[in-house]
Image: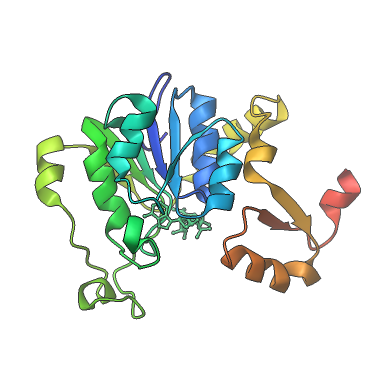
Length: 221
Ligand SMILES: NC(=O)c1ccc[n+]([C@@H]2O[C@H](COP(=O)([O-])OP(=O)(O)OC[C@H]3O[C@@H](n4cnc5c(N)ncnc54)[C@H](O)[C@@H]3O)[C@@H](O)[C@H]2O)c1
């Protein structure tokens, strides 16, 4: 929604983690046409591909716009969503190297003039462990010339969850998102399983873990 997706929109989602997969599920609920999800993580890409999305594999040497063109017949989409943030990696030979500016610049490249970008991925005003002096200060080498020329709408920041909470809950309860649980690949775990689950998640697992500390989900099921 924040990236301006509507019925028929073409959407590029950077990141196939839980946030990117939620964005893909949300785009589908809204009625987006072609939903393209990009990542370097092939297990996560397989998961979204098996759930009705197109994929851009950033480990390939082929530039993102070329991969989009191979899917869509066009090098640009209507909307872009950054579900990665400042831990972004580059693509091709740079796929294992952090480039915090990578997703923002990719979105500026692949979102059409007058399109829209949503940025739930987190950026901060200080990142002491970042790889360059600029990014340590939370600053990014952004292609502002392209931003000026294409003038996309940009929404960033904390997700306005309370704004959407009730409507999404109703959509789920009335089975309007039957693909959601397969897309998210959720596993309900007990509190004591959390350390192992965090480890698995940070290694790039395609699962989303939900901690059920009192066993209430299990009891309700
Ligand atoms: N705005 C909010 O309210 C809010 C809420 C929750 C999470 N977040 C943020 O959203 C972001 C994603 O969260 P997550 O839990 O899905 O994270 P995650 O780390 O599980 O997933 C991010 C994915 O992005 C991939 N990636 C790296 N570089 C990429 C690139 N250049 N292009 C495309 N994909 C790339 C990674 O391989 C990874 O699979 C994080 O920054 C998180 O902090 C924001």
